[in-house]
Image 1 (cartoon, rainbow, N blue to C red):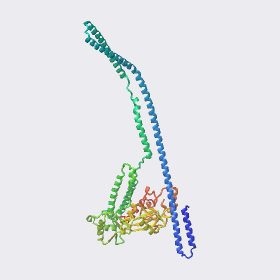
Image 2: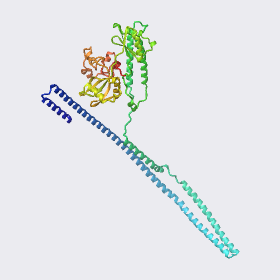
Image 3: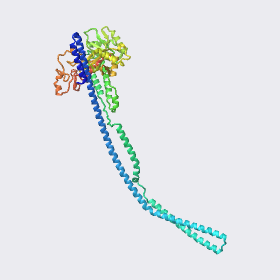
Image 4: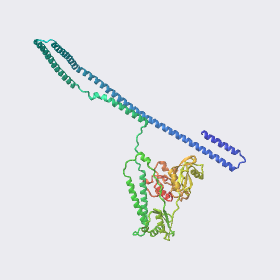
Length: 580
């Protein structure tokens, strides 16, 4: 017991003591005050329990988030470890390649130095000889210029001039021979040097690879850093491929097969009751027509079961929930005979004689038998219903009327049990005014029909009868504010099931069966003491057993929502409800 509950208990005890000490207060007033205090105390207990459950849920959510965070951190650590190992191995390999390239470059440099020493020495000698020749040419030029100057000053004799010219000619010839020799040496040296350079091997791709690898390593490191940032910002999660769910389609297929079997049984029974085989009855014609329509519908359902591409997760989550409620307007007529001795077959014959469908063109969706020799005709539209009603009324032996449609029901889950039915309706109107905006006063009908028991003794599930407009708004909204909480709203089926015989359409008070029926094995005992359930046997539905079903159609309990008999009776019960 927490502090709030203890304080509430103390206040309750003090209130009780004050009531007991009050002598002049009436007994009824004391009882009322005592019940009010007890109700307040129960409300406090309920709120305390709700608070404890909320705290527990928060702790569970916090634990789940912590586990998820730990999982993500471990995944990140593993990814970082793998990336670090990959990066270290890549860097080690890169360092080895760079060291090998450096050794090869040094060896090539040494080899190039060794092979180019001799050509460089010869080039140096050629340059030195060229310098000497230039010096000799300058000396010759100076001698020629000095000779010209002296010849101008003193006129030399012919012998002296000839000797001088001869000496100059000898020097020129020696100079020309030296120049030719120098040209030959230069040409030979150039050819030898070119040959040496051509024989030098080019740097291979293996040597150049470390130089270009340097830029590639830098890019690789940048990519690894970006991957690490992406892993830190977005946790890795494997992609989930949802499988295709064919359950709704298969259920629809089974339902249509069940409708076809029921219509075939009706056709067989009607064929036995026909007096003359040459003239089919109206029921036979209607049954044949409905069997054809059902077969066409089943063919369409089988076509929809063809293989198709699997849906993605976004498509599955975005798919709207299917609604089993028939939202079409209910255009139904109940036709009966004024003679109570006539059978349903005779009433159908009179209806066939009264109707002229070729002339009027009226469309009927379904014709079925009801109790007390009544025939229920469902029309496609209000105009068709008026045409059929006018033709039937011309026959004085028949009576026709429209059924009184019921209002739909909703179930509000998790309402505190301390509220009365009137308080629940008033709270819904006061706390959910946005739902009632724009609704006519005539459509503001809302009444609590009964309450369902909840697991929590302080809560209940009230079933509310309301107008079709409010039913649509409540179901579309999904949740309502009622008192101290926000409650879930669900559509409530009008189908009634007996708790004694487990049949549909009546309650236990109107049941004609004297013994209890088991909801698990269909035996004559209470379901809580079922020996088949204790042994672990498969369940067996008593309603499907009464309908002469067999095989897998029986493998469910009498309360199962997959029961074909329940689905059939639910459709019949909803046909009397006006949903729009």
